[in-house]
Image 1 (cartoon, rainbow, N blue to C red):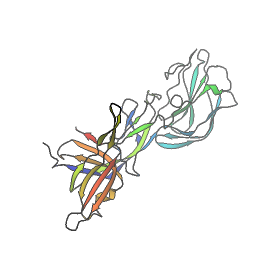
Image 2 (cartoon, rainbow, N blue to C red):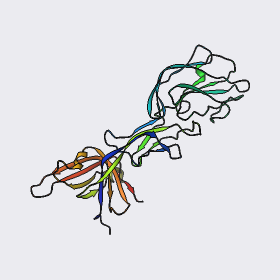
Image 3 (cartoon, one colour):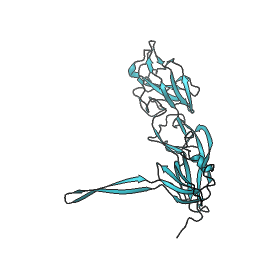
Length: 325
């Protein structure tokens, strides 16, 4: 039967900054990995996630002159930087004889300039397989797509509203679409839907983030560690001939007892009421551990003839993540 006599509890005593940088696609266009092994969630240190894409503005309208578009001023994220782009006018390229069905992609390039990228025309139809005849082109890496203009006439003419396509996710890259979930325990983010392979090299748009990685320090004179875990309760209601029941789940607080030096200047107390990480090792010589993050609370007692101590709680939104290897 095991004991935790050689156990140890680490807490988030500091943070190491990780500058804004591209995240690495894990291979499924869904989960993207940071250089940080996990994210700090302490107030003022939470990760900043900035996928490339339009933020505001960017209204596309037909111009009075043939083949021209008017684009209103816009803001967008490029490589993690909020970039302002002035209003402008661009001239599309039409298809020639036998390639009348052609798509021009309106983009903001990596320098923050409005640019048109022209696809390959097709004789009779559009299609959605990028970089093929009649399809939208691949967008240069570092650029974002904000519209597609789909024309079927060889002769110069005014662009019509029906030829301007701006559906988010299909023709327009919006920074907050699709939405994502932050996986703070392993320093990744996961989108709710796969990002399309719309850029040169058949890859998705850039996803950028800055964050802080927790710096963990071991706590001394700790006892009675309790992990935040799920508890289940059942309620029942009598009905004719028996009863019906319902099960509900809740996450209990993590807790531990800390024996303090003076109960005022101890380093641990500087983190009270902050959302920080804790790592519990039942045996400091072994790999298995439980990691949990929550709001750290303390209740201190100062007995006259005994050790100063704090009953510590960790209020978590998730149960502990268990690492066994």
